[in-house]
Amino acid sequence: MKRAQVLPASDPESIRLAAEIIRSGGLVAFPTETVYGLGANALDPEAVAKIFEAKQRPSFDPLIVHIATRAALDLLVQKTGTVDRRLMDAFWPGPLTIVLPKRDNVPDIVTAGLSTVAIRMPAHPVAQALIVKAGVPIAAPSANPFGYVSPTCAQHVLDGLGDRVDLILDGGSCPIGVESTIVSVSESSLELLRPGSVTLAELRDIMGTSVRAAAGTTIIAPGQLPRHYATKTPVTILRAPGARPAIQARERAGLLAMSAPGQEYEMFCAIEVLSSSGDLREIARNVFAALRRLDALGLNRLYAEPCDEQGLGLAIMDRLRRCAVSTQ
Image 1 (cartoon, rainbow, N blue to C red):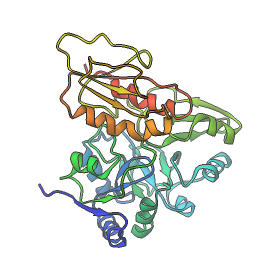
Image 2: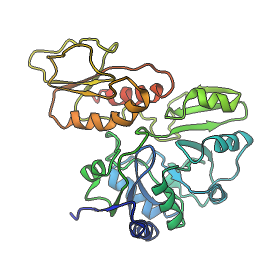
Image 3: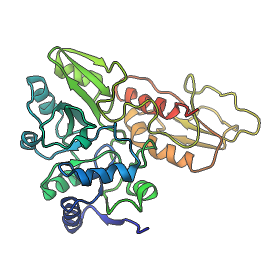
Image 4: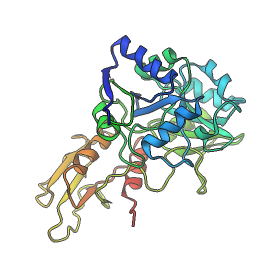
């Protein structure tokens, strides 16, 4: 199979070529402030089908559509409410996805047949430039095989989808490192469908109304499956930072540490420290790359320390819990 071309995102010619591929029905992986996305023309159902094929993604899992301007909403959604617009004013462009009632021209394959579509306006300059140059909204989940750890650099995309994508725009490491916050709005409240770097506290500051966690098992946005963002190596979350696991005899184990360990952990074959100071933004930026490095070592089990579930910590622990769900 032919390997994907990897081009520097800083070169305008790379953006021009990527936009041409999108318009012609191809797949382009590109950086956003959250993770790398696998993009196709959101209005072309055959192009979007290539995303599902490349990722081996189930058809019941909807995609996020990325736009560069508020004007593009008129093409995709039936209406926006006062609360929707307040959220856009506060967090767009940025890592917030809003679920809105869709127009009929949005293909059902994008929305898994739902009457709503998830929309985001990314802040990353490469993503913005690509959407503008392509002249179409871009449907894009994370650029990795379905269910595996999300990609935060071009090499991660190449490792996972190198023979299934036409072009990878290399824009360096993603500055946030976990996927966008996803919300849906009703008249009386806001439902948090997926936590991200736009925190509950920030949403409540803007909303002035109740914010509740998603209830029920119906999937209406990405990242809601019980097992997701997962390594091949089984993961166990420890009770607290610094807790010593009961490692089995001959078990080769790795540790995902939130901050620098206070003591030597000779029982681990490898340790990844996400932040020497325990800074949540640094932890989020590093967590997926660290999980990938540990997963590549052929260990029997990975142990992950928890972090405080305040602010960005809620998103970090959401990803780790879904990673740790057993396939058995």
